[in-house]
Length: 201
Image (cartoon, rainbow, N blue to C red; front, side, top):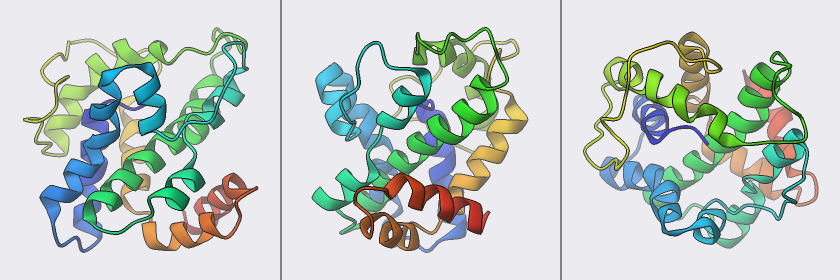
């Protein structure tokens, strides 16, 4: 998953691009899945509406199973700004793994073993980029339990310029329009998301 600082940067940029009535509630929703997930591995998967995935799954399969957007929308939907922020968090996670990590990092870095997926690859990188992102996007990290752990140095996998482009992409997605696409195709919602992103960006 992206660091919570990255999620908050997406949320802050989203507020510039779309009208949100209750900004605080929206940002609380943006943080919610990771804060709820702190309670344990089971709660983390529940908070992210993850599909079951074998410990021996390939890197690609693990990336695709981390978030099920259809499951979230069919059970919770978007009823208020908190839900909208929650959905944005899940969408950001989904795109981070399937579009950013798998397509831009994994396919280019042959040192990552396809049969030993591990998100901890990126934890050290978050320490290197979070301070830059917090400053660039004016992120309020006061509710972020992981804030202030940044270190100097260059990230190994997550290049800052690529992350800036990723944050920009996620913050410009019309959640209402994407919601309609996802809910129309239960069995192939991932294809709907991919087509939506490719068509609009």
